[in-house]
Length: 286
Image 1 (cartoon, one colour):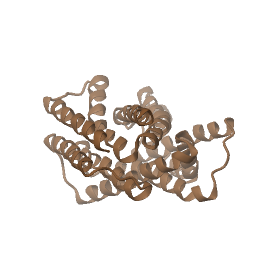
Image 2: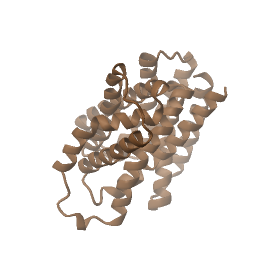
Image 3: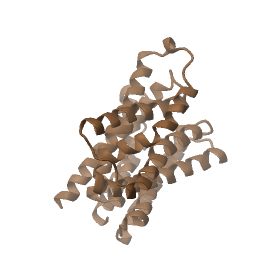
Image 4: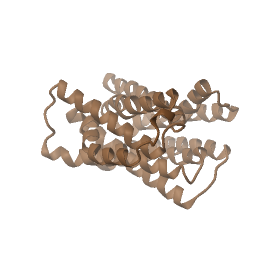
């Protein structure tokens, strides 16, 4: 029980950190292109993760773990950030939340397939209801549909769910921060080339808030958040703790309202309350 509670607490910290990604990204794209932001944050996080591995003298991963590390890198370092950045060129951020609401379900399904978890049947009712609440909230905010954008978001959700489940299972052997650090290093050559290819033409035109946004998504969204997130999934269970992701859109919108003075509607509070109830139910039956 204590191990499970520690997992849920660690997972919640990870979700809170990830929730700052949306406001930080909105600030950062005023100075950087989405493609550069995606690649640069991975490069910066990889250098920090590599330094940690070197300073703390972590052993190289076993050969049997290399495929799993590649899956994590493809899912959460490259695939999800890149596909969502491309998708947002064809849809509004409100419409993208419809698909983000499906991410906890995808994580739970991959937890069953990749980690052998077996949540009780009632769990799936709460998980599906929570996803419906997030999707319904997003649809009330207005959206613009695009087949290309929808397909990109579906691909992003599937890759991310797989990367979360695979990384959580691997964290039980290597540790959370080690997994994300090795995954970042595995993606460094590709993301380094991409960053150079879309290098900003005029660095002097980049304002301080954009640099701050890049710093946040690089250090916290790509590294520190995963340390807590993978630890939470490994200790508390992939399917159950993964439902905490349902809170992320509302936490992100709340931070945007607090930091960027964006409006908050009563529907957000109502949907958030319903999601909290679903997360509590999922926790009980996970």
